[in-house]
Structure formats: structure tokens, C-alpha cells
Image (tube, rainbow, N blue to C red; front, side, top):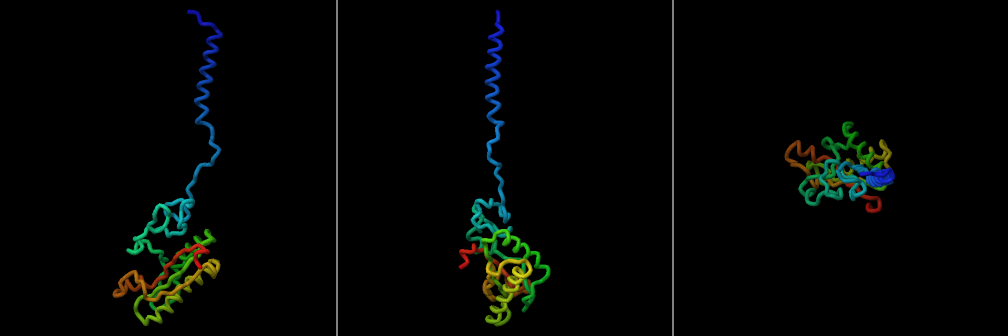
Length: 193
């Protein structure tokens, strides 16, 4: 059988053309940058889909990054700073400054967000006195945010709730320690009003 030189070159050309068509499809860059999931609050939901962008890291969230309904009612995932106070005191302890600094960093990263600081007391003392004491505790944390970490005063609201809403049993010393606290709530600036 005689194979001509022209038919061999023609067959080889067709084969090379077919192979080059296959190899080129997967090697071309798409022109789009790779997708990166940025999760600023470390709740496991990308910021592009996160409807509650400043949830605390230990909070149980849904697929949109918001606290799971029903869990907060059971005491799971409250927005609580780890800032506690001695009995009848409004002094912020030096060991609590890193916690407040983390909050300030989160607020600086999101200038469209404000914080409501909610102060509480244990049940010892008169109710009216405890309400004022809790207001001063929330204001003390607010002062640290504003004066030490440069957060705009307009973005921080301090409210006192006194002895209402305990998170622990006031019959024990440990429970009272946990109840003397400041919690927080994040709001977008337009929703704060």
C-alpha cells in the first residue's frame, strides 16, 4: 500500500488541528478574578451575603449571618461584651479594655453601623438606684469607645436597664457577678432613630 507524502501531511495537519482545539478550551483564563469570601465578623457567612455584618464571633447565626431566632430567647448567643463590674462600681477594669478595643475595631471597619450599649446590675439595692447605676456603667463603656478609641459619640448610645433581664441567678455571688454587665446591640445608622 502506497501512502503519498501529501496525504500523510494532510492527515497529520488535521490531527494537530483537532488536538489544538481540545487543549485550548481549558487553558484560557476566564477574565474574572477568583471569588474570595471575605467574612469580617467571622460568623461563617461571606460579607456579600451577610445581612447582620457585626455579629459577635460566638453567636449562632442563620444562613444570612443573623442570630438564629429562638436561640436568643434561650440565652444562647446574646450580644454581650465581656465587660463586668464590681459591686456598686462603674469603673471599667483594665483587663476589659481589649474587649472594648475589639468592639472599636469592628465599628471602625463599618462606619455605617452604630452600637447601643445596655447596662445592667444585680438585684441588690433599690430599683431606681440600680437603673441609674446601670446607665453609668453603659456610659463608662461609651466613654472608653469615644475617648480612648476615637469612635464618634453620635454612633454610641448608652442605656441603663437596672436589674431587669438577669442572665444568671442573683442568689449566688457568681450569678450577681455575671449580671453586672454591659450588653450591646448593633444598628445601621438609619435604623437607630
